[in-house]
Image (cartoon, rainbow, N blue to C red):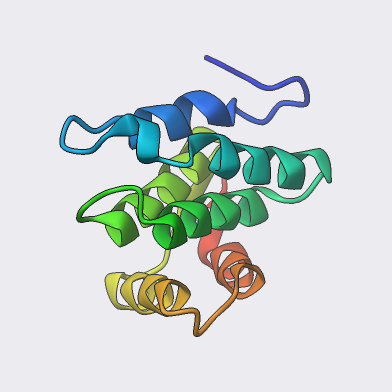
Length: 123
């Protein structure tokens, strides 16, 4: 298991793996920007839900892939929560609606984090 110094799983390997895509020029992907944003939030001692929301928003809004950015952003948040002992209990309709709203800037990261907080069970 890879863990950060304060118990959070390391984020860089997860984001880097998610952003590795043979169909896209890796040099064009703002990996450092996404990771810096996540680590800045992480350093502020925020919740897992906030970190997951920051990760999802970074992937969704930066469009690093030709296709699938919303799916990958949602799954990055889902996997981050899972790796840290939280289970997302939201139904498919709610998850789709919130992720599409985040992508369309109809909700902000804090709204998405609030929804994640209300939708998770900590093991």
